[in-house]
Amino acid sequence: MIRINEKKADPPAGTRIGDLAVTFKPGADLFIVNGFPVPADTLLKDGDVCCVIAKGETPCADEMESLLIARHTPGVHEKIKTAAVGIMGLGGLGSQVAVALARIGVGRLLLVDYDVVEPSNLNRQQYFIDQIGMKKTAALKENLLRINPYVEYLTVDAYLSEETIPQVFKDVDVVVECFDNPETKASALRARLVSMPDTGYVASSGLAGFADNNSIRTRKIFPKVFIVGDGETAASPGQGLMAPRVGIAAHHQANQTLRVLLGLDE
Image (tube, rainbow, N blue to C red; front, side, top):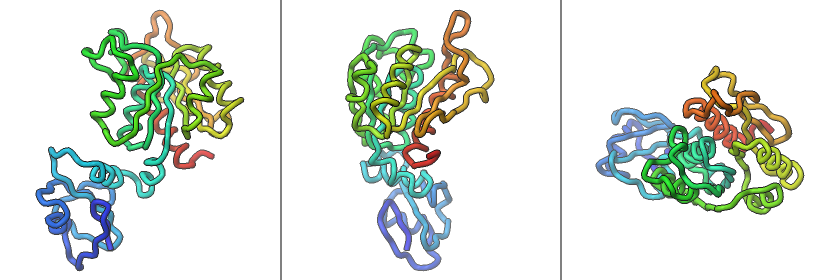
């Protein structure tokens, strides 16, 4: 027994993935078996998980899900497709975290920011020049829908405070803190520790400039609470925020979010 495009099949011994694709997806020209692209003449064996698609064709929701399952480690998608993640701040960190989580198919993303897209944002944030002046919530949702239209995107245009954070994020599994203001960061962490003890929390501290890649690291400071960065390099005159290092930190945050959703690092 195998699975192909999330449907069970029991092909005879000696069946090749390209032969089976004729039935399940006529015109398919990309074949994935157990998470890896393979040639059409690959022999199938019992227990294989397969996905076949036609290049250039927009997949429907079911096909998109089967693609994600095909490329993920077995069992991952089942855990994250019903998960909810909240992102506080949609700048250089938050916009990139959102893109990464949308690409892996996290079920629901709550996007919160009060600001608009400005020209200075474009050196590191996931927006486009024709979106200048748009609310970041609206602009990012627009971009994410082009990446994965089958994730649920919820937006809140608000300035967050220690008092409002617990209510805004009460229904999420993990909150990702992506602020650039130290006082706001501290307020958000207090809100998590005092009012949201069961919620995963992935924060950031120290990612400016172009220092050593490997100085960006992830530290666990409390149960289900993590901080990403080098803890030192804040933005300052002569040390700006740049796409490469901000991107390293953002993807640390996204990967740690995934680990929390999978129950790792408990």
